[in-house]
Length: 345
Ligand code: AMP
Ligand code: MG
Image (cartoon, helix red, strand yellow):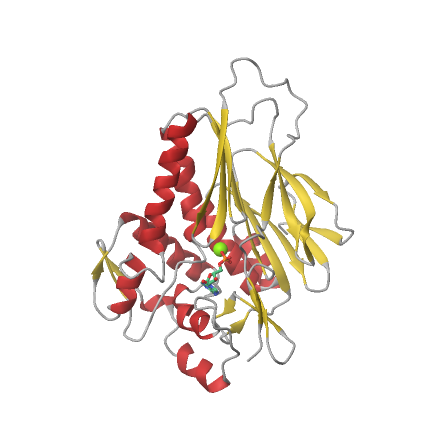
């Protein structure tokens, strides 16, 4: 089968803009020195910039990333995730990191009516998104695999996790968000006063940007991912985007199939949303929600947000419309697309 495949190696969903939004004072002599590093991990480029802490803080952050990659990878043989999958039906002792992510995965699964379901992994694999052997599975294949997709069958007891027999999971929808939280924590513990990181499109900031009141972040245009769609200003926040342009292939039928699967039909989610960005305090939470809102589609996503609007959100539809929530600071739309504010009532 001739298939054109694209991956997220060079396409980060959100980007850090170097200029600050504020008109505050220039960095003073007491501003801690900025250091930065790019790391390739979890199948993506990660950039880390911090003020204070120096190379030692970057070393500690890189070490934390490598360790989490080893724990959370769905392909590495001895990762927690692989051990859970190869022992489906039996309890497996896992790390506190895996437990924290799974707890959020189950919680977000409940809250979004199953739009996020980490046990969708057999579907993700069948479409080829983990193996690179892309294909359009038959309806029969999908129906067979969907029988085992149900996050409610995950059992957590103390520090052990078991899946229902026949199930398999992958934490790809949340892993980078959790890693962002852990990188920020590690940088702080190692003397960094402020910083901004981008883990393949998951942007997260902490502390006050020297010489500016806020950090400015750009979100990509899903129709032209090389361009910025909009910018926004953030204090200490995570900005996480799930987009249809991050990993996809074109099938023999000429249709484009992307990596976010709707557990309701086993196919790439096609409910009208082609990019979902979540802005909030926790990278883990934002990552869970960005994937879930992409699957949910505009109406359901707005409903979920309205039921507990503790985060902000930018949705882009396949018809070229932007919906964004009113709490976003300094929202600037450069795309020419119509943008509508979502209100709580
Ligand atoms: P993200 O880029 O954070 O939206 O995560 C996408 C990744 O999550 C995919 O590459 C799959 O590994 C996994 N995934 C795809 N669909 C789902 C889903 N409905 N629920 C949970 N994980 C998913
Ligand atoms: Mg996600």
